Length: 452
Image (cartoon, rainbow, N blue to C red; front, side):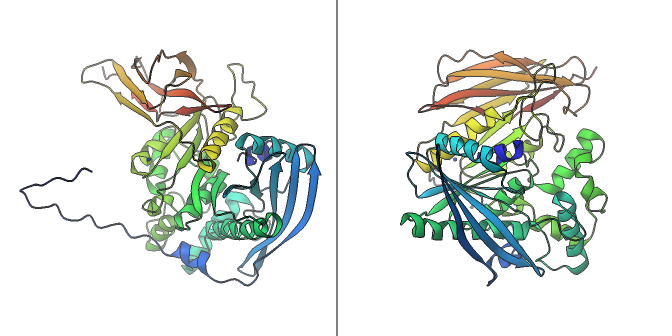
């Protein structure tokens, strides 16, 4: 049930100079394998409306869709559209992609409540990817299998992320046709969202350059700039995370030093397509996610163009449900739901979210981190979260909260360096969009104890 709940959530002046102009920066090559696969004609694509159900909270439409045939396997999907009572179709629709099958009436009711917070219809695409395949393999084991087949054949159609992206693209096609048929209304663009490998898929869907992708919200996929991230894991954990053992066991990690492996990790890395990733982005991460090093975002954040926001969920793992000091976990990822709903509403109804800037500097010889915070909107409140660990592995650390006084749009504070080991810190601000309260975070900083 939880995964379905999570699935339903779904930012120059000219001048004259005497010296010679610097040489033009040559843009990095953007791989073509992804767009070649997604753009390839496939006559197996189809969709139809299976069911329309009127409920107390709104209307639930169930569509059946075939997105493609991938290496002789037809990919069939359920596509659910939720329209809360009193809500009208909008030119932008949220499309969340998910791997599980639809999970019954309770999930539909929860989804309608969340769509009600967004104030617009929301669609959920299931069966991304088609699984099990190839001897019962699912999820990461199936992706790893597809990667191995690419290394053997160097056939650009093999990486499983590509048909996963194509299923979203065909989902956009189906939803546009459905809206014209059912509502006599044109849906022009989409906010693409998903969690974990479906967050990876959201990044790569935007990477195709499809103009219908207005914004993205990738959750708990904090591995953009993949080659560097694999090195970061070893630095933080001493070895690759046990959560990605499906790739380690297939000798995909550490990345083999071959031309084919280098090409594979390039064509499935959102970083390779960053020149196209200029749309607004809401990135969500858990501070205790066992998959990724805590400061993974710092590897790619500054290189992302366009408006971007980050939410770190304190004391939360891969499923973004927060835990208290006693280890009791909340039943729903409430902080994530509120922020993703606010982001979606802001994009659909053109209500800008605040822009937050934060500088974190350790002055030479100082024993503290100087933090300065600036927002273009006065927040309802501000907090500092911090924690400590003996190494750079913070997966089991508990984050403590401290109120930060911010009477206007500026604030400053200091965070002491640890006497031993490491300390991590980030800032969080709470805002309100109409009736919806939500939080935004700053990037975090890991501090080391001064060398003695």
